[in-house]
Structures are given as C-alpha cells and as structure tokens.
Image (cartoon, rainbow, N blue to C red):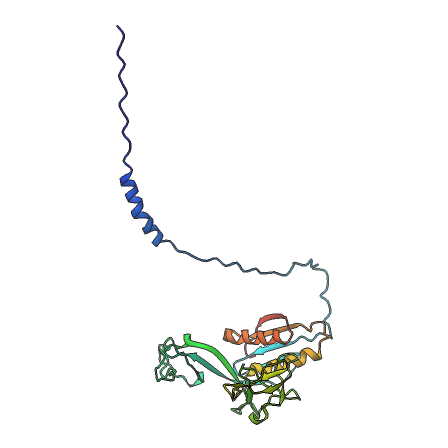
Amino acid sequence: MAKQLKKAAKTEEMDMLPVMSLMTVLIPVLLTMTAFQKLAIVEVNLPERSEISMDSEPPPPDDNALNLTVAITREYLEIWARGGSLPKEYYKEMWTFRCRVDGDTITYDPSTFEYDDKGAAKNPPKCQNGTMLDGEKFKYSIETIQLWALQKESEEDPGKVKMSVYSKSDSAYLDGNNEFITDLSVVKPGATVATLAESSARKLACGQSQPGVEDICSEGKPAISFRARSAYDELAKTLIMIHGRFIDSPDADNIIVLADDDAAFDKIINVMDRARDAGFFKINLAKLAAGG
C-alpha cells in the first residue's frame, strides 16, 4: 500500500508592520542627531622645492634690491628699505563699534576704557540712544580699527591728529602736488583733485555725472567731509611713491610686513591691502622681534 504523502505546512508571511513602525520612529531621531557641515576647499600653491647643495655657498646679496619692509607697532608704522628707514608714522588707535539697537556706528579711544578684575569694562561704549554695550562682550561689536595719523615733534609729544578732506566714497583728496588737502574750502565745484588711486585726477562738480568729473554733492549739498586722516592713507601714499621710483629694482613687487603677536588682525590686513594697491603683489609676513 502506498504511503500517503504529507502536505507541507503553509508558510505564513512575516509581519513587517512592527519593524516599519520602529524605522519610522528612528529615522527622525537619527536625522536630528546628524551634524551637517559645509566643506570648503582652499587651494594653496606652495613654492616648489629647489635642489640645494650643502657644499654650495649662498648667493651674494643684491645691492640693487629694495628690501622693502613695513613694521607695525603699537604706536607707529615704519618703512625700511636698503638698510635705512623713513620717518615713523605715528597714529592713535580708535575702535568703531556697530550698535545693534539702532545700526549706528560709534568711535571710541580704547585707552579710555577701564577694566575690572574679571576683564569687563567699567565704562563700556554707549550708543547714540544712550544704550550701553555689554561690558564683557563689547569688543565683539568692533567693526573697524581706525588709525588716526598723528603729527609729533618728538617721542614724548602726545601729538596732534592730522586732518584731511575725504570724498563721499571715503577717499582722501590730493592736490596737484600730490599732497593731502587740508582745507575744506579748496574742494569745490570746478576744482581739480586726485585720490590715492592710479590716474585718478578729476574735476569736481555738483549734480553732474560724466567721465572725468566727480559729483561731490548729494541731494544738492556737498557730501565731502573733513576728518582725521588715516595712517593707512599716509602709508599708501608713501608706498605708491616708492613703487614708482624703484620700479626697476629686482624686487620691486616684493614687500615684507612685520608684526608682533599683539598686532590686531585688522591692522595686518589693512597694511597688506594698501601694499597690494600700491603695486606690491608679493607680500611676506614676518614676526616683529621684541622691542621692535
């Protein structure tokens, strides 16, 4: 008698509903714990490695090299070249803050601030509406660090702030002798002036806009200003003169910027910008030795 075959039991389908419910809960939780970052790639072109023989002597110094250097100290900017230096450009450091409450800017002398034992300012800056900035965090509101050029007769002389006429686009005006204009009455429609930019001579007018003519008015009134001259402008003017005079030097496009550890980054960037605008495109940074 043939054996009767048993039918295989019917396989039941797996209930995936609990698993899907778990994933539905876990996915939002995992997304909230994910740290999203934007990656930025900065291309850096390093100098090529040259073959150096230990037995060979270093090349002799080039007597025609300019060796231009700008030193940034706490009190002045100084230019060195070929073993000599130009007169120091003394300055008074000023901090300009941006008030969030009204959007206006205020400028203070940082030497006037007094600090407590915890480093908080006892007399923090005040906005135009009287609101006082946070004594501990007010430095984070610094928008720019200005350097007001000083006229000093000696090291002990506290100095007098140099004044100049500035355009409504914040450019210092120069006269026909390439000197800063210090008389507001000279800058008027019909006059010819220049700025620190190359080939910038132009005539002034009020309400006119055409090539070679600068409109110095805004809503029918002159928008020029008479204010403290920037030490950066003094530096730029001297660097432009040096670059034009020593254009044939083998290192005519090179400049070294010296700064100590306490030099604010804003100062270094401004000096580098002025050097680049003057034609010195190869800029090297170096540390200023103590007592410099």
